[in-house]
Image 1 (cartoon, rainbow, N blue to C red):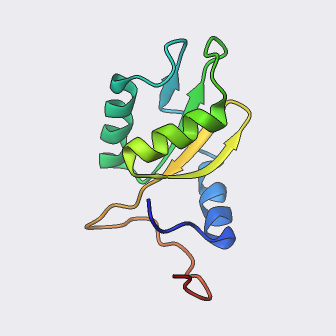
Image 2 (cartoon, one colour):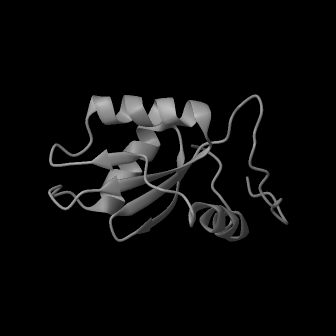
Length: 106
């Protein structure tokens, strides 16, 4: 996604993600087209999702986060241990209102 989150926006999203339960699990097959389809589908209903990378997955969670974010046109909010939080605003009716950045960078 082209526009990156500011540290203030990222902190706000992290605070919202604390109470989220992981809705997708990445297992030993790592990132599959089915995972991507499920994550895309999840973004139809919510803007912030948490993903759990299972212990039987050999890939690094940070790498998985980057791949998934790229394929779903979302942004990585954070990766803590084996948990990934992604954000993708709804194009028509955003439900999460981010703090506005002090200055726009182009």
